[in-house]
Length: 576
Image (cartoon, helix red, strand yellow):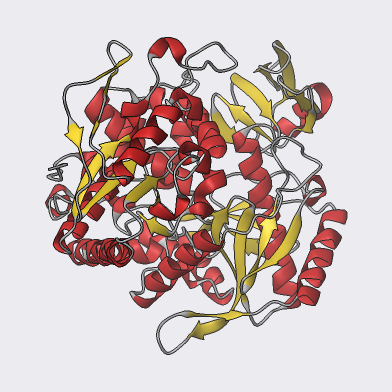
């Protein structure tokens, strides 16, 4: 090999290729791998980024040594993230040009895309942001401006900048959260991206240029709008708009609360932790949870004459179990007598469990439950009859009866928790007016900065990783590798029914990221570079680098009834 050449192994075609020293990955991609093909659908995608030794890199990356390179497109999770980040920058530029005296805030993720608002500078008297209501005509103008930027095929350029210089730049751009974050990190320099003369930071690679962003849309929603990116199943179509009234309202309420206590982003949270306010934040956040649990119990009490069954559902690691026990506790305070039963006890015997497309038992299927028997027992309980509650033995795979008898007395209510609890088909033979439904999820509304939101699924993944390792001895690598399957199950079995809930509980706690960092960071560092989970571990570690961790003394202030104790241990909640 000549000194001015570098050999790279391309995973996509299984061959070694040579590029000149100082050339970037796009040279290799354009010559040998201009597109990637999805193995399941056969659909071809533009190359957007690359995994270099399992680390995500822009195509502008210039390798200096022997590397293993895998080019990725929109069909890869990291490719989608790079596409969406780049799309956000185009939106940012469009808003800056059309509204130079206002600020774009990319607030939170929704099933349809990213909810965004344009806000006025400064705060209202009660500490909240002042949204600028965007009309349909203005949304059309923003969309057309974005299309103009895409049509120009402008490059995204990455440069290094001294931190002090970057802080001044962000303040000049009316991005105080971004400036506060950079200040809290305590680094000498940072990476800044430029697009058509405008600077910004994004916490992950961007794609080569705006011309790749052919598919997107924006649709009005609330005071702002939803930025829609392509569907995973069909790149040529955007994610369809789904009205998520309860979810949006809960996120808005939490966002307003964060504004009132002046912790709106990771940077302001870091500052509060560094200033020794962690315990105060813990107490404040737990008090908000207690208040909201009490409100749910008040609703249940008010409807106790009609609704005798409380169904609680939510995605993985949302805190369903703790929430069912906390709600039961609040109901006891009001004089009710809650009976908590796990829906898992109504599984069919193992031999009757349906199988998935790979031939494995599908325990997340609705039909893994004995629906006829469940409905029969619920109706008998509502009629005042005594029933014998089964227990499912996971070792033998059979349902067994051990004489656990139950009858609903005057002040009794039945609380049941499970992934299908909001699916009307699960209780199709039960009068719907007798059921009160609760949806629990960690709807994080604390963002990294003004235009980098935090994924709610990342929050839950970190929760699950910590709990899996502590309770089940499952490695962080195993948790990461199973996560996509878990999320597919949620998309099929949980998210379509979340708006069926009578009430939504946001289980996110403003202090949990600093707490989770203390436990999750050492677990993630155990994952080896040659592991298929390594790129995801690196991404999560990079995100956790932005967070100032809580220390053991501060963590000890988390009460034993906290949802967080479900994941880190030390919980005192019981079913008694």
